Image (cartoon, rainbow, N blue to C red; front, side, top):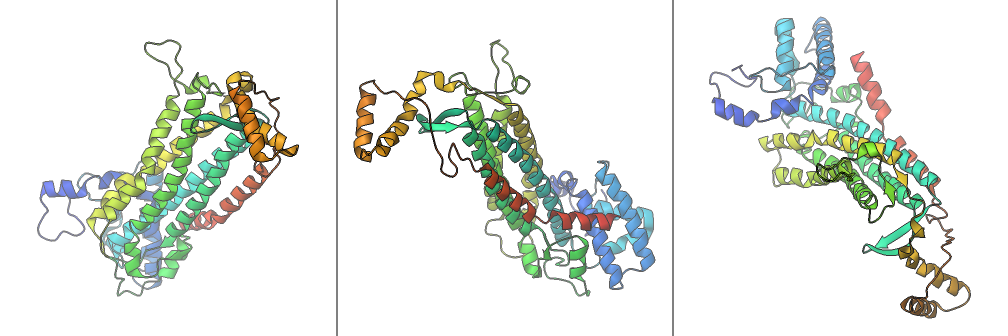
Length: 445
């Protein structure tokens, strides 16, 4: 068993080691390139305050850039017996550079090291989620415009209620994503603050320049109070998880609609044949498995904030190993949501709609309110018009032309998609992704 960074003369029991390390080595592969980038910023700062020479810095940066390329290509591994990504990177440096490699940990703890790794990883993932959400949003807006004149039944209590349209249906989910992105932007702002320099949660006697590492890594600001920087672990993940859950909630509902509306009893939409699966016994089946799995995965993501809260609940200030377990449920959630967004975008782009739904007489009663409103416009008091139409329905004599004229903002005839697009653009521009990307590119140049 390799010696750990913190071991002195007594080696830890093998079973204790297995239990305490858990899945950390596996999870730390998510963080590898971010750990390297954080180290590059940290040692650049160390040189500026005299804890490294210029020559030592040059050698360390060159080696770290090589290790970063290994991580970016997917070839980075954490060797057997090595505790975590921090230990692996330091080991690789000392093998290559000798004692110089041992100097990179000055002025920091694995506590603030993993904090900065998590924040760098998370803000990158948020950017990728935002890109995926924007792609789905654009498809939904496009489909809303394409099918804006095609009516469909609207439901309350799963009973046929009033006229809706595919323009409204697609557009509703597009606007829901705008609100989700507002939530995601708030999570990004909380994430994009630098904890590096807080060490184990109580700062350092070295004259660290935390402003410098904040600028080098492209953070908006730092987590100023060193105790709060450590208290923020778990809180950041919980808040980001709520944002992911908000997006997942929108996708889950859309998936449910698509499953229901594509069934034979509805027949409102047809999913692409290449996105359905068959039955081993029933040759006619075309099952919406992709959306059923999407619904399940998104519902699982919606449980993520509660899982994180239960792990971190009632922990006092300071670091506790409980927080390690959050990584196991938090880090993989981003890819799962991105997969769901990708699948949903693909299917929504290729989905086809039934333009003849209203030829089925079972939907004729959804125009009852239209008839009531027509009578009101002719001067009949609303309550009298309501009763008159109700009696006609009871007598089986109701009829309506099927024409609707809704003109107010956000209705069938006035979708306001341009306003929704403008709102989404405003939210997207509110993310400061460019500063983050520019800083990372400069650090790695």
